[in-house]
Length: 572
Image (cartoon, rainbow, N blue to C red; front, side, top):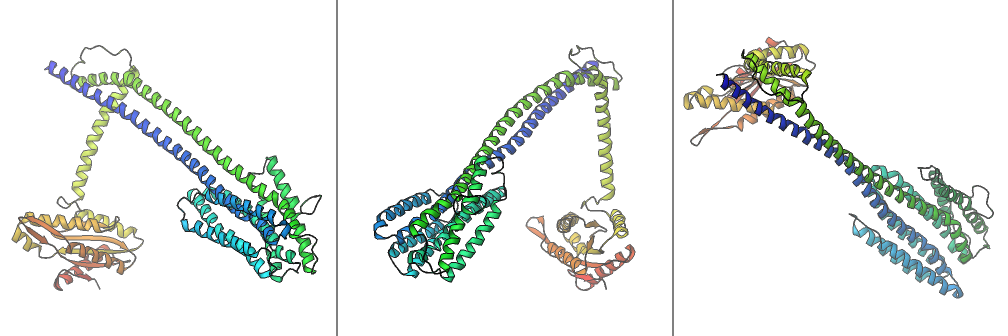
């Protein structure tokens, strides 16, 4: 007998040893899973930064193309108004700018954008170029102004592409909204400044006073530029600490917006001067060629500021991408080292703690059986002070789990109906009365009784009746709300206690349960299917007590039976 006990103890020890080893493996695998989750987070950050950098690079191309469309207007204006002697040079400049514009448009990456947007923008640009070519040398004010307006329209058509690309940026990462908006503001500032000058081209070319429509446009564009200038004065981190950015800002303020000390008139000064000359009927102090050349030079800081900001923005997000990659690699290395460390520590715990505890468990088993511990070699690497503690915890834990399981089983048997697993009558009444004491809404009682249930038992037998009861219980459980109480309170009688804001809501639940029961099909075997219906009685209110609620629901149920069954009656 002692030998058998020793063999059983050895077998148990080996089994527990295998389990502990499996637990150690699981611990290592869990650490790998945690490390993988952390790595996934940093990998998402890296992918986000990578995609941000790529999208901003594409956005930069879109803005470059927009500005090329805007830049083309100046040589187009010179071409339209050039005298015969200057026409070859003006034509060459315009054609060169057209090639640059077309190359910039070809470089745009649409990425999930409708191709029709770019096609329409290019078609409108082609039409505008045709209008400019047709207007060359004309002295017709309307024809020249229409050609200029057509170039405005070409930019406006392409502006839709720019807005759609900016929307893609924001949809991908809301943090890109600010940089995208600032880049568009800088581009709009250059565009509006160009339009401001173009509004004066035809009057200067023809030596005519500036029409009222052009004057209104000049005033509107001057106001827009002032607003844009105020918005651009808010630093988003680009200017602070960057001497080149500060210098460009100061150049824009000085050479175009007439802010600060300047050796020559600014762009806004030049516009104001020519506008005053036009308001007085002329003559103008500059020709269109002179005005265009000087004004383009004064707008140059706007272009340089825009280009510098876009360069900084793209470089900034490339730096963010590189930083995210470095973080990903760092976390990968650290996570790998941590997993290896956890594996090593787990192994050490297994050898120094778990194996000695297995030996101690054999001793406890032997003592519990009133036997002396078996003689065996003790592991040299062990934590002696922990052996009694862990052994006692294991024994107490087993006893407590057994007791808890037994109590749970007894409680379940005492509170539920053994067949349907619903609340039994006593528990239903106990919980229901507690509901009434604590209610904050109206409480309704729905009683139902399976129609002709005795006939089911008599015809098909009690197993068929039991199957019908279980099917009805499952249907009720599946169709009530989580906080409703459902119980079997008699043989074929069930009850539902529910909170509802009003009688209409409670009636709707009753109708849903009625439909669910009508749809039941209980398979009795041998091709026989039992259909189930029930009669329902509904009662409730805010002030009724338990006995009244039960009595009213029962009376309504009786009325449903008397009224033909398979119906719902509400207590009056």
